[in-house]
Amino acid sequence: MKSKTSRKSTFFVILALILALTYLAFFGIENYYGDIRQVYVKGANDIRWGIDISGGVEAVFAPDIEDVEITDTDMDSAKAVIETRLVNNNITDYEVYADSRNHQIIVRFPWKAGESEFDAQSAIQELGETAMLTFCGGTDNTNIILQGSADIKSAYAGVHPEDTTKPIVALELTDVGAAKFATATQTYYEQTISIWMDDVMLSSPTVNTVITNGQAYIDGMESAEAALDLANKINAGALPFALTVDESKLQIISPSLGSDALNVMLVAGAIAFGIVCLIMIVRYRVNGVVAAIALLGQLAGSIACISGFFPGASSFTLTIPGIAGIILSIGVGVDCNVIAAERIRDEFKRGKTIDNAISSGYKNSLSAIIDGNVTIVIVSIVLMGAFGSPDSFWGTIFSPLMSLFGSSITGSIYSFGYTLLIGVIFNLVMGVLASKAMIKSISQLKFMRNPALYGGKKNG
Image (cartoon, rainbow, N blue to C red; front, side, top):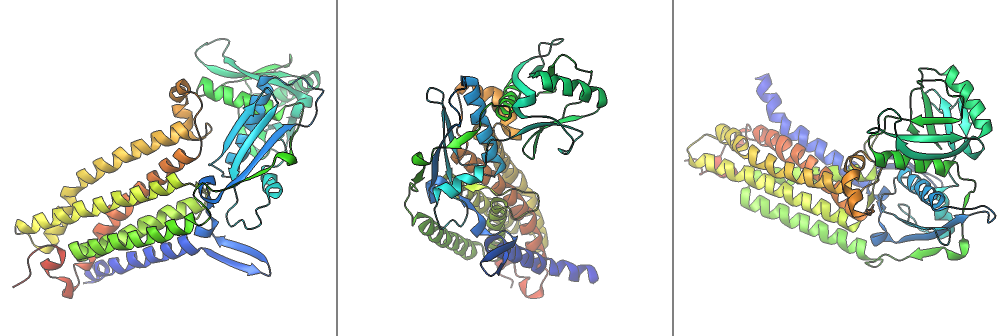
């Protein structure tokens, strides 16, 4: 009896959890101390919208001195450090262009979440000054060994001297840096010397030999592209100049859809979501009610992943294609629930009881649901790898292939792949696991023991 009572309560427990997640995902938890806003749990208001939705800033970075010879490699390295700053600030919708002829870096990125002042000069400060590169003993950045251009002359991508199939990053140190590094490699022999840009660790190689000639290399690179990327970042931190913003060229970028587009999209999305849920309920009765609850959980889970709701999960820049990814994943979720509901109906036609029809219906629909969702997951991963940050896990994997097609655009298409991926993942959690548990639970209630409520024929 205790087991059956526990099973009956499953529906209400899952419903309460989904409603709680929905509230927190959309509204978060915050408090105000005077004019200071303290955020405890991030909600939808903390989402950073893409340039196409909220507009943003265009800035031009340039070297702060003119009497230094600046090469194309220097400009590529400067571009790399700005991209690193953008990604580290969870800005995934951006455009960065290097104009080597005029020694300029053009950067476009969206406003912060909740921006009201629209001050371009203040917004550009988010990227900070030129990053400082440091080599530190151990795996933290407290014991500094080498730092900046005073110690590090240059870095370049190459191949291992003993195995030309292994990419490396070769380092050339200054005279002062070479002396410091000789002492450090002796001290940290067979230990780790980590490489940092600001507070972000770029690499943590193990010292295999004492280096006294000012020449060193970092091995363990996953690909030649990864080696080139790390070399650019090292060079960026060792640039003989700082990057400054030409304030006369600061521009405010207007959203491509107009200032009211976001509100229109949200209202239209809410209405469409409500209509879809209503149709599901009318068509599939109890199955439709459960499907609507599962879809709400899927939507809330997607919003939570974008806003940075979950501990350890960074916030994400949401663009119009990203919204399209959410909508498409909701459509996949509807399809998942429709397949399960139709299979349950088929089982009733075979004369099965409520419990057997529900169990068999979900069992027979699982392969079709998994096939469709896995296909979309693969597509999402390819999009994230092809159009995402080169530093990301999937970007590293797909960089050899995508390098054949030139540079990719981080932002809009990456946003689509990301939201589609997390939407499908939550669809599997909500549309398969949670839906099945809720229907099995609610079907145990005495007043719900009527096959007609699940697609069968009415009792009696």
